[in-house]
Length: 173
Image (cartoon, rainbow, N blue to C red):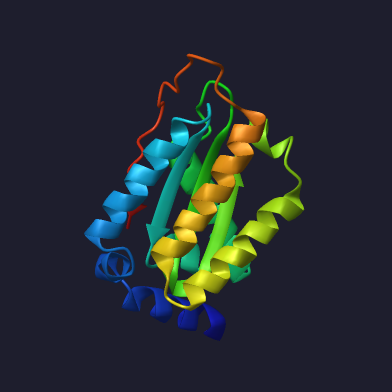
């Protein structure tokens, strides 16, 4: 019970202004441009979602913080319709500031061909940048690594373009 109360207080303390400080408007614009440029090289879709804290409905669950964070990332993967791409090759890069938590959620088309350890290694590299307060750098690096995987497994054919099924703008909450 005490753990839930502490977790709730930590998340309640943070709000959208926390997210805006971590990812200011100029960083947001650069990240959007990088997603757009990335998606011109492959047939996949990439979304970035950064939130300061979790909704109360998640905080009172009787589960570990890592499980709650994963559940939230999966929920946002669904809500943002990252799963709803023609080739099932969408990827969500999720960052939860309150817990310094990172999740990469890949749709089945990509997760079937990429080993789980590859995703975990990416998360560890992102964590290092985030611990140093370098949120844009960490997200950019993750975006580059995800792009490399998508180019390798879902390349565009000569003359083909990515129909851009999802918005390229990162979501800050």
